[in-house]
Image 1: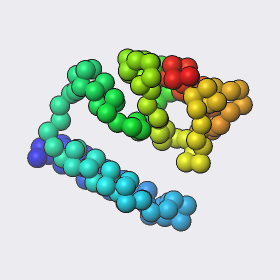
Image 2 (image 1 turned 120 degrees about the vertical axis):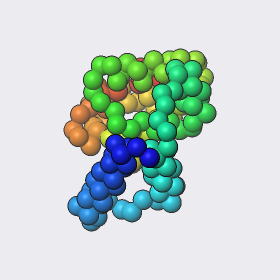
Image 3 (image 1 turned 30 degrees about the vertical axis):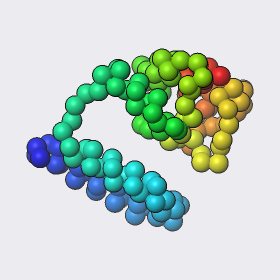
Length: 139
């Protein structure tokens, strides 16, 4: 394994350990499903890195129900990319989205999420504003 990749994995593991120590009382342990996901994610990072084509990405999104959206940024490019991905799936193929900053107890349809004064993300931003393009496409 390349030294840079090895260092990245070590840094990620250390970050995870620190976060778990600091949040241990506020955050429950990972469920078995999420623990398997975490291990698979670390295995993927340890392997060779290659860019996926747009076609491969669309195929992966079509095959994943629900679609986990992590590391979302409020930058227009990020929002537009997610929206474009969902629109490219075509009508009737809209995935369920799991959004990392949305509290777990919030479960609603895209049209409901667009209502003014709706749910807030854990960082305080409006769900409707942060994810507007993709929510409008899904609705």
